[in-house]
Length: 281
Image (cartoon, rainbow, N blue to C red):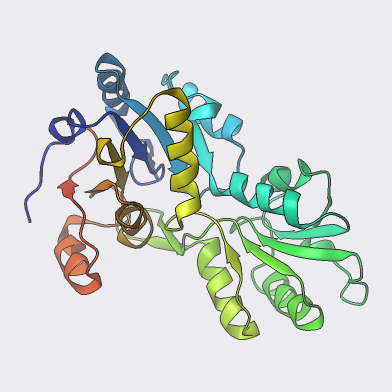
């Protein structure tokens, strides 16, 4: 398993798509030295977007978290989140009634911006579901894991409705050696219990890559072979980039650790174009 320096790879491309958690930041905050990586991109006129499955915060909030740490080039228009795609779906498909969400109140901003009435799962009356038109899995915090997840199951057993998973991540690292269940993992469990197919937004699905690709080409024509996707997870970032037809870098600074990388690549058959320790050279 040959590991290369990220800066050597990046200079061969005109645009780079970055995952956020595990690539630019981790459980300790920003990965040390990440600002130098963005300085290198700016110096070499390499465009970039951050493609994140984080639906818990708005692009403005996500960009501000980088700005407060001194990375001013990450502006809200550079952040493309799965929550944005879920919001677009609701705007076109749900015209009236209420949308129920599982997550924090702050994560519901994507839903509130549609003009629809929003309601936390904990506030739902199981005997009054007439106005509810959709349920959205947003975040893994802000609710009772026992009471409210069971409530979601029973809401969906009682009434047919659109179910949107705004973050497809099944886990995320909380320390160097431990992970936690993400909202996508909860959605997978509920989907299995209910026996219905949910609508998912986020990597590895193509919508997010296409959204970023169209934004790039609105400014100047860039071919797919001039774009690089950087991620820490084979089953979202890397397979998503591979399916979209762009080169990929697996970094070992997040979900996939060096000791497991070779085994995971072999067992899944998901092969990145390159492997790097991190995006910091």
